[in-house]
Length: 337
Image (cartoon, rainbow, N blue to C red; front, top):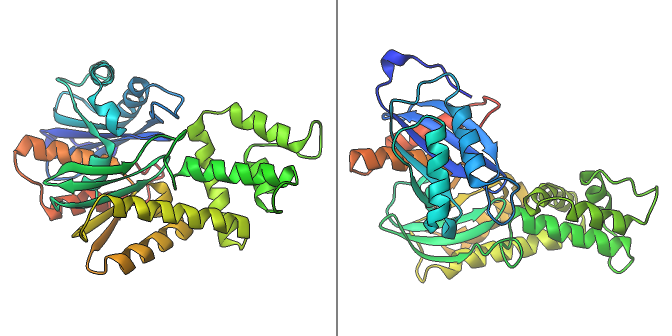
């Protein structure tokens, strides 16, 4: 989706893309931080999504440049899941998507946790704690990843993430359906989320299992909202799941530093937009590190486009420019990256 485009006011454009697990977000900005294009694509997580990174990035870029010329682009950053950013085959795929949209040159591919950190602060040192489709924490030193914890994928890790919460909710629902665990409103909520009618046909647990295995893992992250909402409404089983998620996330952040960091950036839909997770994590971090500044951000695309501008200038961006980028995403436009 494009914002109002005035060719005479734009000479150089910069692109930032955050290829997330549930969706891919693209931003196009002028050098002074005015966002003129926004785009969305499908999720691009290599282990849990249902689209290739190339498809996701190309779709988001095409959406962002809808109706705008791409020839003024000077720099671009594409953020992807950490280890994948170093894979030559994936970088080649993303560069191909970049070219197909009509953009010149090639983007720089960076770890998504670095873009998430840069979306929240200009400070060279700090910690980023991400909980969206997946989860990870990293210590940042001189704008580089110094140490990380978590981020091992939905099958063996990503504790506290949307997929982890969704799977925990499904497991609790199955135990209740089989009468192996306590009664919980999660049984009805999971059935509703998976479009299951428990009153007809085969037994409910079999329907849940079939529905779960018929979806990509990232799609199960949508059940996380049912878990957190049930916790807020007093369901003790859901409250235990939420408490465990908070413990895991705080432990991740604590594992990457030995001393209180100057700033912690919280990023991702679960940790920022889910009240029962957000308030508990923030309270725990403030109790542990009372002098640390806590910043929240949803969109790693902001950090990616900020890095693209910075790369072109050869100098750090200002707090004012980053604040301008962040403020524009707070405006309701129905298409918020």
